[in-house]
Image 1 (cartoon, one colour):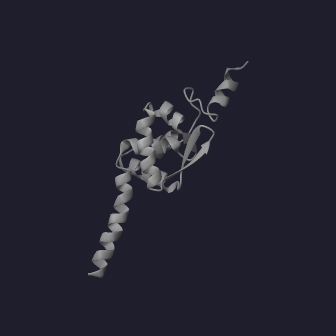
Image 2 (cartoon, rainbow, N blue to C red):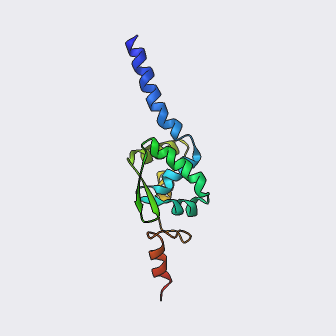
Image 3 (cartoon, rainbow, N blue to C red):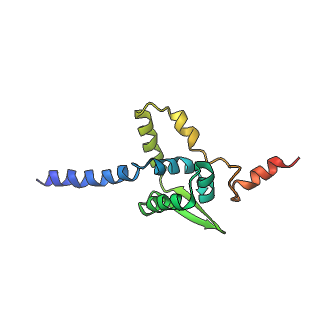
Length: 130
């Protein structure tokens, strides 16, 4: 009987991560943040979603312990607490026939022209100057 309880408790805990990742929006956010960090305005620019929608998902991911945040002036930057979550997303992608290269291409937080944060704007300002 004890073994049955242990496996049920363990299964419940494992299922929690899959429940968090069952939202395509949350997976998109995690991929966009990737191995670096991204501010909310960057996520808005890349994903095309409103700040309120993103904030709901970011709060859920943060409360679950998958994200950590830091404030820099008026910007809040998010990063993964553990990159193992990207490996899990990558394995799920592979099970669906998506190559690791395609997943990796999405996990690079490149500067974005519509993002005004200090991490994105300086690179594009420099590119526009003669």
